[in-house]
Image (tube, rainbow, N blue to C red):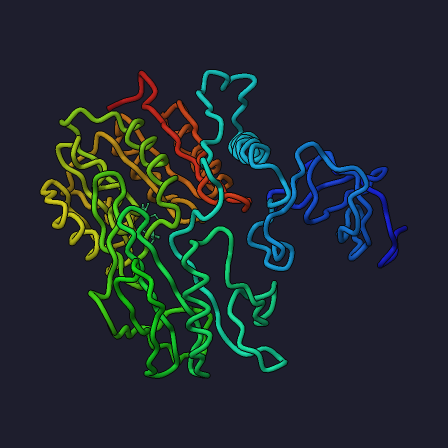
Length: 440
Ligand code: SAH
């Protein structure tokens, strides 16, 4: 048997869905973070169960051909970029495999057998998988030596690890963080920075327990600064009250041709370049000709809804967060779109109303937990020609696709898109078409 701190040698052969390397010694399975399939490593035993255990990487004996130098010295303590030591092309292959495995194991699809006709794309990657996030949130505070620190929380704790320049955030962050750290006030909790990649507009938001003043560096992109008040004992970063200190209190950015207004609290996709590729697939799969009625369920601030509006007769968005629906309506107005309507409520409740126009195409983009079963049942009753499913969790996607396919739809296309390079997350866009012979 193995004991704690024992040094073991392991061949890494696979990756878990959380991005840990998996190795086998005899019949025993090891999970070892920061390793890559193909590595031979030396690791120290941390925790042992009956048939598996966890170990900590000590030394790479033989590196995998897929291994690369991690660019961020803090990757191991941060835990955000779990795949950072894996070459980017290998990350993309891993993500496709992850989606495929989930669809096969959870959804019961068989892409080598009965489902071999499904068009399954390779993961669409980024040209540059760095500096891709348009939003960064840095906790700020004092460390045990009395030094002002801002960066990220160490795993499972509220200790702040100092990091002014996260490599997946923007270049401007460093100068902004440096400047605010110099003005540190014990009431400060977080610094939130958002940037419109197409407009260049930057918002700096300091979250503090009470009203304080601060200034920002002389950075041409900074078009607005706001203070958000959060005095609650909570893990939620933003409080209810936002005070605009300078500028309009929001920034603007584009997805495709559409303009969006983004305030401190608005939800907006964090990878604006990849989101265009993802929505591009959703638009392609929806195959609109101008005559269709489209329902976009889980529509957020209406980004997909409005992207589809131009080619549809009518689009309806459904979203549970009231503020997001208000933003969606405002976004329709700013862009002069008149054939979109939005409803506040749970998708599964709203679409069951009898007086609604039947859709030709339904788009869903649910949160990680996937669609409510009642929502899927209602979609099946409505019998749209096509269903486009945009998913951020391929396990719940697989579960939901099985229900839709058992209800008379064929899985036709699957396209993974990488929105979060170096993390294990992957978005997937899927097309389902009504099986011929099923009742309309
Ligand atoms: N399509 C949007 C948002 C996707 S995120 C975009 O691409 O930007 C998922 C959205 O579903 C969130 O806005 C969340 O508030 C909303 N949501 C969660 N549960 C819901 C439900 N039961 N019914 C409707 N919307 C829901």
